[in-house]
Amino acid sequence: MQQRLPRPIVFVVLSLLLTASLLVGWQLHQSRPAQAAGFPTHYFAPYVDTGLYPTFQLTQTAQQIGVKFYTLAFIINGGGSCQAEWNGTTPVNQGFLQSDISNLRALGGDVIVSFGGANGTELAQACSSVSSLQAQYQAVVTNYQLTHVDFDIEGAAIADSASVDRRNKALAALQAANPGLFVSYTLPVMPSGLTQDGINLLQNAIANGVNVGMVNIMAMDYGSSAPPNQMGQNAISAAQSTFNQLKSLYPNKSNAQLWAMIGVTPMIGLNDVSPEVFTLQDAQQLLSFAQQNGLGELSMWSAGRDQPCPNNGAYVSPTCSGIQQQPFDFSKLFNQFTGGSSTNPTPTPTPQPATPTPTPGRMSIIHI
Image (cartoon, rainbow, N blue to C red; front, side, top):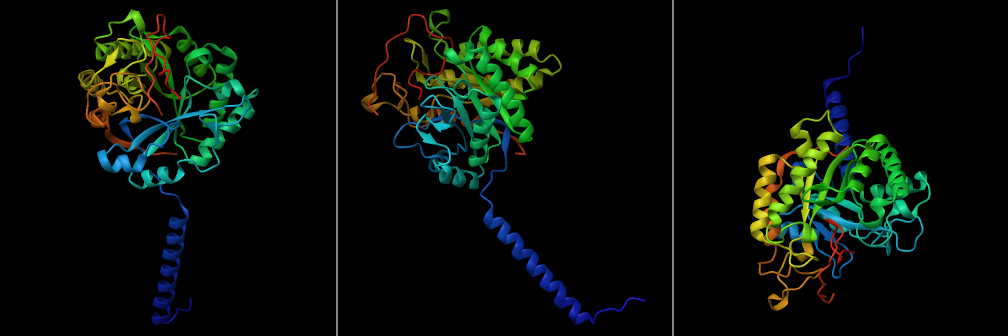
């Protein structure tokens, strides 16, 4: 027969255990950084040009207009060595944007960090081995506690088969080391769909075992091959064509799954290629299409451009749209797309000339 403790002693012991448990839980909570509840099923995550000064304020903007998800651009290498840096200048372990990101997560938001872009050296081209490349990707994931990463591959990088293969091998290993890590590819597009280089990149990703969660198309800068006065419809045509291409690449996925794999990123206002202009009417048309078809993501280049230029100037700039609008008009419109259940996370304006033969659907030449 077991000896029983007197009842008052039992109460004291239980009380002490409960207090200790609460104290440990509080200490653990205090030591953990603020984390978001997760990305919704469908979300608007505009690109933020982190190379601009002053730096775009994530938390302040979220509080002001309600946009809580952002794509931070870009991680590249500035000196040709295998080193992950913000805009090729700031190492990722220097705390850049970390306080703002933490505060944003405390509001229920989160960020995607994007590698690559139109300028600089993409890491897969700077790093000579899969292991060294994976280590640089991991450093970014770890320092910023990421659940989502994006790879904006365009220009010479998308046609570089050696770096494409190196990147995909590194990404497969990165996902194995970080279960649940969401990988998106941002690729050039025309209304007729992804370029052959983009198709080749995705085929290589599949062959290497990369779980590509999103194919985000750069619906901009088409040139003479698309009507410049119907940019909304051009973006919709590009999405429909990309859907048909993904259907061949991923034959085992349902139509709903394939639509959810598609993101669309227009360049708001004046595009680099004159006379292309993406208007608020185009934005509404694209939003309706995205809602009706269950796309996974809407984005735009860029959050910092979502305002009129001084004196309603009509020119291409990294800090304004070049069209008449109110501040954050595009953001407020596209933010209606964000919704659905959360997925658990395991400068001086310079006008640009028209380009006779543009690179299809590339990110802006004012990209950093």
